[in-house]
Every structure is written in C-alpha cells, then in structure tokens.
Image (cartoon, rainbow, N blue to C red):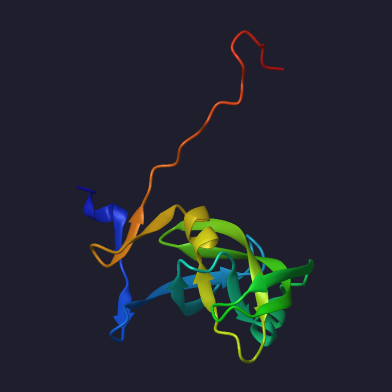
Length: 143
C-alpha cells in the first residue's frame, strides 16, 4: 500500500506492544544533535524529557502548563522547545521538563510534526501526506 521508503520499523518491547524509536534531539536547528532511544506514546500529546538532560542540551523553560498523567493525577510542569530529527525530517516541538518519577516519552504531536503516524498494523511508523486547507474566500485577492 505504501512504498517501503515511507515506512520505518520500530523496536517493540514486552507483551503490551511498547514501541521505541531512535531519534536525534537538539536545542536549536543548527545545534549538535544527540542520539536518543525514546518510547513512542500516542496517548501523550507533548514529549517529555528529564530536566537535567534538557538543561545539558541548552533547552530553556518557556513557561508552565498543566498536564494529566496516565493515572489521572494532574501536575504542573515547565515546558520548552526542542528540535528533533527522524529519517532526515526535522521539526521543532514542545517538550515537557519531566521529574524523576515521570517517564521520558515521544508524544504524538512531535511525531506528526515530523510527518509520521503510528502504523500499528505493520508495527512501525508511516510517513503521511500533509494536507493544506485553503482559508482564502473565493473572490478575495491575496495581498
């Protein structure tokens, strides 16, 4: 259905089908990238990484936000912006500074910003075709 170059296999661990992907992260587009293996979590909007790791990269907190954890608890965490690279695709996304008890995960927003979606049937990631929705009304000239 999809050409092989548009599909990326990921490693699975355990019986629950946890998926992991090798990815690169940086604090800026031109900065040096660090290799990571992260768990993919389509139930998580934002990506979470340990505070000491993000500080070492040079990612600075931009603000605070509230998050609901998988167990229903609500927490307040700082967030910043980091750059990720996967298979030549680069994107900037929001990262949550996680605490020592929080799991570092790669969230669905970052995955989609890089142009990939989970393909659970084949057990990996699939490149998707981006769509553009016109916001221009008919008869209105473009400035």
